[in-house]
Image (tube, rainbow over all chains, first blue to last red; front, side, top):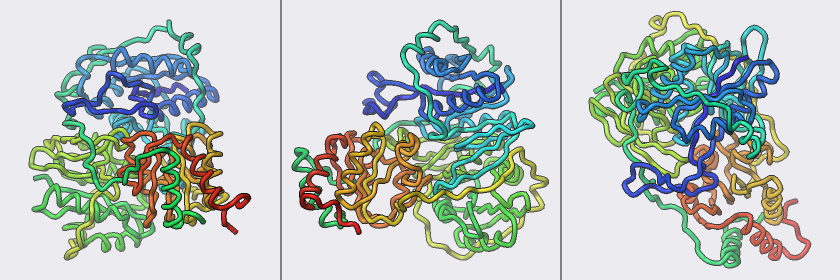
Length: 263
Length: 331
């Protein structure tokens, strides 16, 4: 099975404190450490496991700039055979539908049985996969937590629904599936692995090669625009305790006693 | 102004809470014209759903089709793409079904799309501006949707306070207008989550750990504190994803809903999916080394510290209080 996984390089919020810039147009990006979007990493692992079972290969693709090559290399070090960068100044300012249109143009030039994305990235929209599927007229399933390949160009999938319940469905190939975290245990990638794929060329496709015009991609085509970033209005919020660790633990103990926290 | 439609999620004949919340959001977008509810499904239960939401909507469009006996976003999308006039605003709950439905619907309607709206900032005939969050709730943004082709907006459950119901709207049966529905995805069954070794939904005190616990071996720090307190350890999604604790210990929309007296959130950032799983009047105490963690907005008491350092200190104090050898008061 030929599998395409759409990945994104995002600020790593697990390790850094992210701040807004002075005029609220963006986050402060100077000292930010980036990594591959967490659920995309699960998607790549899932693709590799499927390819190991069924044969075929995994291609990772991202929409972005030169800096984004690092996440493609990381995922190639995991085992993805090819990495592709979709990059053009004309892509800047694309909304989710614009990004989906760029990916659609790339998909149309190849032959993929299965397209995986992560459920969502740092913006939390969870949109691109579903949009890509609709543009391709492929079936789509979001929040997928298991995939079994059936005979006859079908998958059996589980989706995560409320309360930890799992909704099982059959879905025809080709299809687009958004992968939820926890579906597998992504393999470890060391610096050595990344070095081994460092010299593999990563082809870049721009708007012209993809046959895309500014009518469908970029800021001019975007029907949805983020106007700013701002800090959430301060509600009541927590009573923030300050002091030494011992002192705070003593205070907390008193609260636990009072609130019934000692069972 | 564009007409506002709301997709009603329902199960076993009962409309989801979001049915009334979407009506409230719709009235903020368009106060002059009552919104339209879309109730799709099959069987006699559909009428009960229509009746239960009628007080919030001016019209209720009923779509009865045997193919919709289990909600399948691909089929619902086809039905909506046929029925909804171009240029309309469609509201959908931002939960597992809405996430399946909304992005593709926006493409088929050629509409703008914004996800997980928590407030309406501005609306006129040309544009709708909503507030949403990025970076797990750390930052908010205004997002403007061009309404020239309408918009599909997913709305965060719980974000809009329902307005009181008024005179019921008219139920209009649109079933005949959707035509044949066919899908390349077929529902099989729903597997109910397995019960775990402990039932965290019944525990009065939870020591809940998140990503800040860093590695599996550190779970012991939370277990030691929980044992001293006579409490139980629960967790947020990343800990269950990593299989450091069983899925049955996970609190949140995709895990369990808990109602403890005391909830000690340790190294949990506080995503809305997690917070939505904490109900009742829990005293929420948050310990997190990131002073900007959204959990501090929801908590009663906040301590900025590394849980790996703090938890052992607290556990030692609890043990000391209990007296040497005493290991919690649980029977």
